Image 1 (cartoon, rainbow, N blue to C red):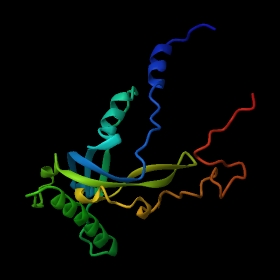
Image 2: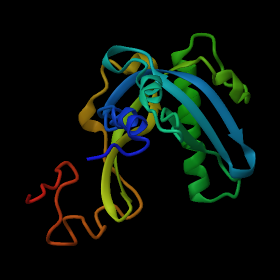
Image 3: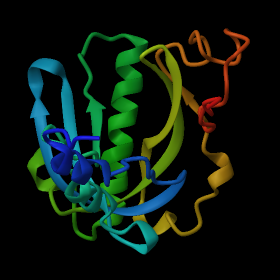
Image 4: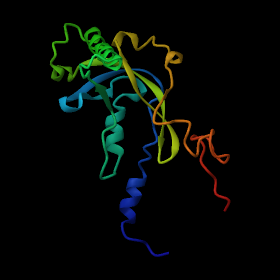
Length: 194
């Protein structure tokens, strides 16, 4: 076989599996940056984990990724209220207040004063839970931040209280167990018969 062009570069990129994930649970974290998009009613928070086996997980994952289009994955999006008086708007306000309460309880002397830039370098507890979604017609399960908690509560947080989140029609994909009879678990790899 003749070596094809770009093989060495492809070989390096293939070393990055990208399949590692933070297990569900509560983790100590630090906010690395915050970006407000007022036109979208969105606050994007960049973070990384600060203790234990998964310390600096997202920075290490980013550095190991050799893809030209790599993105930092330690990001959570917080929707902001639209001030439209709807039930959803009230839920959004409550969810945002959970973030500010957790930050105040995790950082002595900090008080939310409507300046999101002050979140940078603040400590917080983050609860990761499993989420199921559909990507390219297949059910995919991954973990993501479900909500913040005060840092002091991380150590004693009960993992079994974290609920599964279904998104984007999870469980209804053509290859899910509710559809095609040939479907397999997303944790299993298909074996080729040769």
